[in-house]
Amino acid sequence: MGSDKEVAMLVNGLCKHVVVNSTCYYEIINELNKHYQNIWNRTMAALWLVYFRDAWRASSTLVGIAFLVYTAFNFVRLAKILF
Image 1: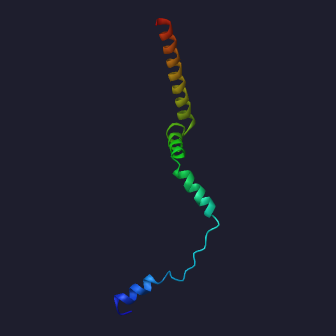
Image 2: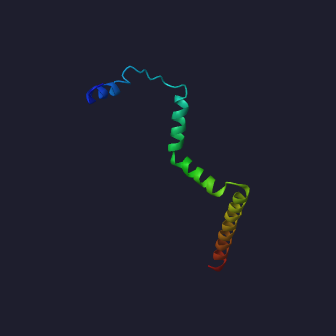
Image 3: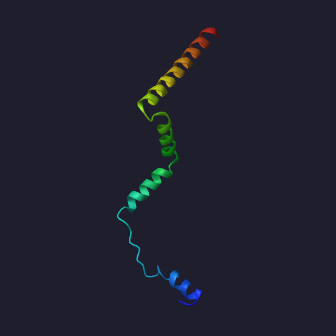
């Protein structure tokens, strides 16, 4: 191993005769990658982590949504009466 060329040839030739076997988890890996790359799944996971991590956050989020729906409903009802 006197020269750099010999070392480079040795290192570059290490994987020439290596047989790559497909893993038994190939289909599962592909399905997981497709699931992760779906933007809807990533968005729902982010929302779940932010707003529904525990019971307190989930209940406060649901109460907030219910309050907004109730407020919008009353606004529309009053707008119909006044106009």
